[in-house]
Image (cartoon, rainbow, N blue to C red; front, top):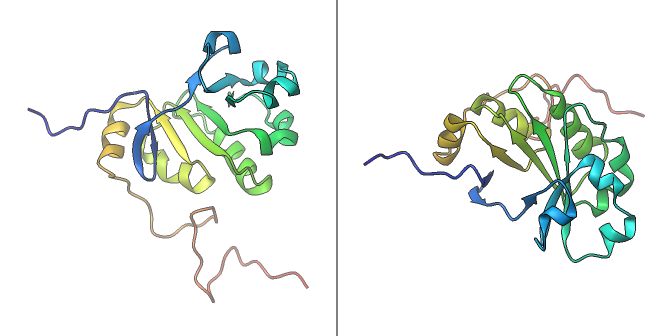
Length: 178
């Protein structure tokens, strides 16, 4: 008998731990059937009429590949329940920049999800850049997440969503504007 927890690759991780993913990933609305929560590729999501996106009881999220622009989403951020940013390889960090822009520059209030080949070393950085949930495929990462075995550095050079600056300390030596 093993002490290693059994985790499904379909489970979704957040700071509270693993839970079942309510969203179905589909290539089209028709492929999703009557699923109440769907994540569609960016091109398909953009091809939907506004009335289709807004007149349904379904939650329709969008999946964005590293090479795709988030610019077309910006006008609709308040209507998107989840944006899934893809990490097809552990060394492709373009989705970090998108997460930072969505959460900090554009104040996206929905769920921001990292999907794909995520290593445990990346999790702390993902949380700092604004990701709310992770849907990972790497088995070691899944095991470490189940054990809540996250290691993070106590001090950061760059500020981020998880950074805390004590009063009287330097935060990039910013000077308040007059």
